[in-house]
Amino acid sequence: MHNRSTQILLNVGHAFDHLMLLIFATAVTSIAADFGLARWEDLMPYGVGAFLFFGLGSLPSGKLGDQWGRRKMMLVFFFGLGLSSLLVAATQTPMQMALALAVLGAFASIYHPVGIPMLVQGAVRPGWTIGVNGLAGNLGVAGAAVATGFLMQYAGWRMAFVVPGLVCLACGVAFALWGTRETEAPAKKKKATGHAPGGVSLARLFLIMTMAATSGGLLFNLSTNANFELLTDRLRGIAQDPAQIGLLLAAVYTAASVTQLVVGYLIDRHSLKTLYIGVIAIQAVLLMLATTLSGWAFLGMQFLFMAAIFGAIPFTDALIVRYVDDGMRSRVAGMRLAVSLGASSFAVWLIGPVVKSAGFTALLGVMAATSVVTLLVLTQLPGAPAPKAAATAP
Image (cartoon, rainbow, N blue to C red; front, side, top):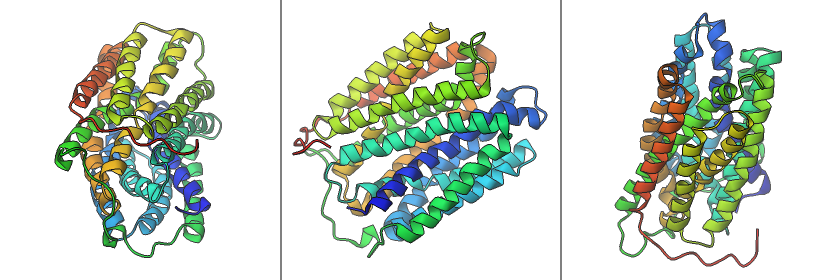
């Protein structure tokens, strides 16, 4: 187990990882106006590089985490993410923005294959640990909505990148001072844990969870990158102030994030396959219902479908913890993330053209269809006995 400071900073790192990636989507209307573009939809495709490199960068990040050291890579993460956020704030054209966001995405790629495996090393209740970490990440999503909304309105969109960038640099200093020291890189340690269930190959597990994570990542990117403009559209005539929309969306994200704690608790006690399929089935139904709603009714439904989307996040990390040895978890996570996040970065490009040509109802339909695809993939996941319940409640 890590010291308390390390656990806190790793969870804070997850929050900043997601916050940084969503500032652009939240501030895109103001940035587009500043750059002289008539419509925010025309600027949205320039953000795809951040999510492409967020996915592709996971592969070398995971390899370096196992073979060079997770502590060292987390220091690169904090300082690189902070500095690249300041770089984004200095951009003057759409192309400069695209390049700076790509750099930010590359540094952001470090966290998931490195930070999460580092956090669960020696965890007594890995499901709960992943759930708490997932909650922290989603609070970062909520923070992007509320902090960007306020900073954008009262200080301009550039400060929306500067302020969190400086805080991230401060976290890097704190991690350097108080983060757990590694005696050796994980890959050099003796293998001790992780095995595929009942004769099922690790390759098959990897394929299934990568396919599920790809469709799930597509859905996560579609929702989190479009939700600010989506809520603005659905509350037309009720609320249009950016700060107010940001507060409402932050409230949705914060409340929905609690689902990850519930899922994390259940993962330590029940079958992963049964739980995973149940969450995705609920997700699909809620997204289909959302296509018919507007106004405050839509806000309530948005909370429900985001709770289901966030609730699905812990499962792939839980599969890796349960079946993959710690000495290679970062590499396995990196390979899975490189494929799934690289492919799901397509969602960021897709939002602008879909909304511009067919509206947000069509986008919600695409999201519902994506959930159905995830559900079909998960039926191929092998069953496995539920873990023994933890002796004490977390």
